[in-house]
Amino acid sequence: MSDEDTLKIILSTDNHLGFNEKDPIRGNDSFITFEEILSISKQKAPDFMLLGGDLFHENKPSISSLFKCSELIRRYSFNNNPIKFKIISDQAINFYQSEYFKHANFNDENLNVGIPIFTIHGNHDDPIDQSNLCALDLFHATGLVNLFGKSNSVESIIIQPILIQKGNTKLALYGLGAIRNERLHRLFEQKKVTFFRPEQESENWFSIFVIHQNRVKHAAKNYIPESFIPSFIDLVIWGHEHDCRIDPEYNTSQQFYVSQPGSSVATSLSDGESLKKYIGFLSIKGKDFKIDKIPLQTVRPFAIGKIILEDEEESISLSSPNVSRQVEKFCHGKMEDLLATTKEQVTNHSQQPTLPLIRLAVDYSGGFEMFSSMRFSQEYIGKIANPKDLLMLHRKREQTNREQANKTVDNVILSVSNVRNDCGLDRNR
Image (cartoon, rainbow, N blue to C red):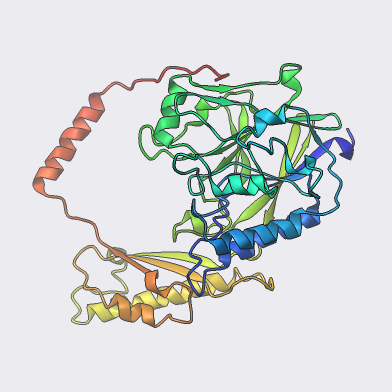
């Protein structure tokens, strides 16, 4: 197959536009990196962009956020680039949620779209109230994006693919906007989630499923196991989880790959957010694919440090009369290391904000006397972007005799319990 048969797609998710927008230092971070993503897309000239949800941080974005996003999409997505693929499925079904615009924006004779954007909604920019509308419905109606994967029922879900063809390559694009995890988990178990497949030569279609749910198990039913996803899917694009795991991971039991692009802006001071951030350039030719990851250059530097004071006996003496000063001095030393780490993340991109994010977690269990966290943080005003939430101080709660006894009983119960296997699922539902 030639390049005329190769579909080229930019992958991104969880852009969270408008996050912390009232912060005088960090308020524009999400838009700076989103513009970088659009700029990369314009340079790479893909067939389209595919977003995995949470374009906006709020389901009621501010006027400022709506305005900035609209301008960016108009600037980078609207141009004279020829569209080299076609949609051969019934677009009235794919975009059923719109009353008047049941078609992709590049098929609208009144618009000049060169890089279409296809997106599902996430849990942050999800539909609200009885109207079942979200900000992305507005963007679909105005021709800025192509919103797909909305569900109009809480009792059962039918997922119809957008069928895309470029040369001899055929893509079945499935999507499902965010649904409460427990509800979706129950619907999968009850076999009330149905995936429709192309009627002809279904095995010759490359199938992508875009999902925005918990991938990590937080509770028994508060996530979506990969085993729920039908095995005919070739590639899952997993949104919602913010740590970047964009390199395709093979699920041996389901025999598909999962790519988790992660967020483009840090919305929490967590380990996952501190990982290097990328977007993907997906190439599909026939049933073969590859993802080239592209590092983002405008992400604010971010480092996390952790101190367990009980492990630092050589530097800090608990019996010392000035132990709190020793602890504070030790923490300042750790801060110097973290600041040095963030300097290594500076890319020299003209738009990158260089004032770093730093989180220092201190476990002061064991009777250590702590210093003034307010005084400590004030010393880093002007040196970091988040002095107010720089420190996270915590200590382990001592267990009572009764709690320790209960834990022992629980361990005995667990040791003699039988492990129950869940029933198998219909792979095509």
